[in-house]
Amino acid sequence: MVIFSLSACGADITPDAEAPVVTPPVSENADSSDSDEQSGAVVYFTADISPEGLMRVYEALGWTPTGNVAVKLSTGEPPARNYLRPELIVDLVQSVDGTIVECNTAYGGSRTETGMHMQVAEDHGFTAIADVDILDADGSIQLEVDGGNYLETNYVGSHFTNYDSYIILSHFKGHAMAGFGGAIKNISIGLGSQEGKCLIHTGGRSHTSPWGGDQTAFTESMAEAGKSVSDYLGNGENIIYISVLNNISIDCDCDGSPAEPDIHDIGILASTDPVAIDQAAIDLCFAAEGSESLRQRVERQDGLHTLEHAEEIGLGSRTYELVNIDE
Image (cartoon, rainbow, N blue to C red; front, side):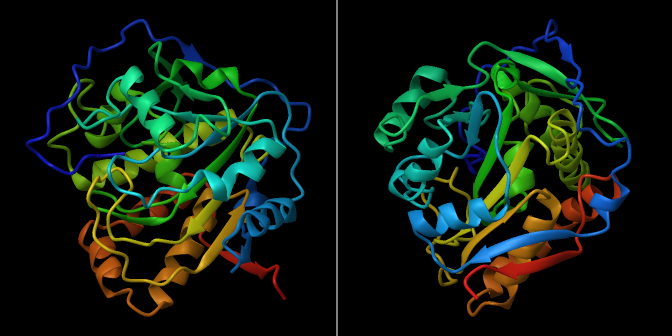
């Protein structure tokens, strides 16, 4: 969720020194070993980009949420309209009685403050289909990062723990800084509070500014922040991932004036593995006609290193089985 203008005004970010560290809840179903999960993953696919197609690919996972359900998506930076439309997602969100959740940006634009952000959510039609919660409206909490090179803790919005189950609903596209934006970006930068976003972008160096970080530190910090979220939610037990491959611009939905899409709409993916679903999305997009500009952007920003590091630290597997539910 970045406004890609270095001249844009940043948010007035004050470090939250009192942000508590929270530990994952104990699950009766938790397995002490996730080696089997990391050996490969199933990614479900449908070419039907419709409310019905979205429901079918979600149901293919055979996953049932428990407790309060959060649906994490991008509300989209005005005036762009590449973000996932409410009419596409309404059936899924309402079927789980979900609350749409987001965090404020740290880079200027229309979503740096909660009041402004809620207005964007209303203007873009999200408040008409579900409750909307800006997770960092009341500050941050810290999740422990296990095995990170750059982050020891990850700052997420303090409302994060108000929800028991998460559906990560991503619009897959390019990104000017990360190369691409999908599931991992949605659970790292996307769930990061303003302070958390700064720490991810700078590899843990700055609590107040997102600028000037090393690219490798940034890509690895995204994977590390994402792993803290996955670990907290039981590594697929209480979190799933759905990515919609439509309106595939080389620019993110956080860019209010993105480049026109070069790739035709492809379909919808669903998985319990964020690394696998991002790798599958990359593979499908790179194989599509018109993918040259997206490929160049991903390569220029070393975007695939996020997936490499994510696999190394145990967030998921780049090896996957693609199951077409249309066949």
